[in-house]
Length: 275
Image 1: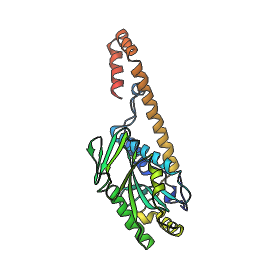
Image 2: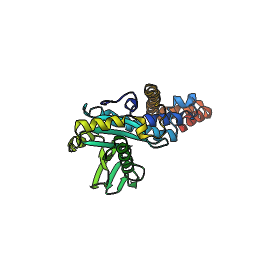
Image 3: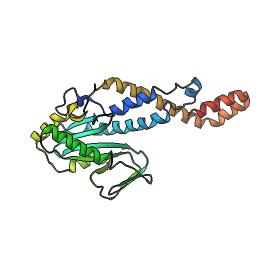
């Protein structure tokens, strides 16, 4: 994690920490796979956990990219904000200013942007307004301004992870939209707005949980969360590989069904249904 003067508070949070916490909570309620389901590669994730899992992958990918920023930047991840469980995916403070990043994992999908509209695969989203990029930036500006005692401007950014394509038909209003591969180049082209003293002043306020959240809670064990996520990710990858192997071996599986009777055939079909 690329950070500047962050103490052992928000500066120690890891990319996707809040999402991983929610993912693991949801996944803890999922019934363990049967032996047959494991053999046939049933996905260990429920339909509810899958969206959290994809979100975690997206935030982790962007977090890895942000590690390449220089020491003049402060990078915070999964910043708890408000009074509930909401968080800001990434907060950046550096010479070009202050940025809130809202990461969206739309891997393999076409994204189209114009003005206030952002569409994914032809469907409108709320990524730019309401409780997303523009809202996050406005709230962050208000909170940091109070903490610093001076006006702090914040730019909201939607970072689209691994899109099939990203078409900017017209410049988005009140927020920027870039792909993960464009992010560092886009930041490098932003004009310098803050001097070292201003960066340090804003960073000193930003690392304190109380700047962002009305009732800060213990920030958890990032290492333990990462280990649990990586263990789950390994199961997901192994299941995917098993499904691929069985897909290639379907003719042979059909022969086994015919040779060994309907009981075995029903068991195999049940296992495949658990995918």
